Length: 87
Image (cartoon, rainbow, N blue to C red; front, side):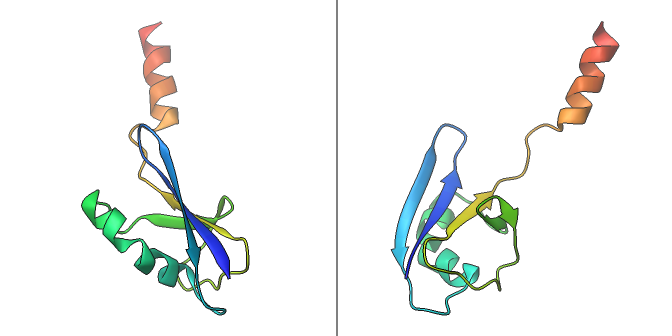
């Protein structure tokens, strides 16, 4: 089955297409792109399928897009509060 893994780097997005056997999980897809993640120093990222968070044990279906979510650099609520205090 064909699935893709999307990684959002700070400056660009990378989508890696994979052929996996039926019954594969999100963890199986991540294992296939482990080298890319290791080179970037990324570990223990949150995952989702088509913008819906999911655990690594989730079974994949044909055409799924596995997404990796990096930690936020800044909290939007804290940024708004800081701007309001400055005004």
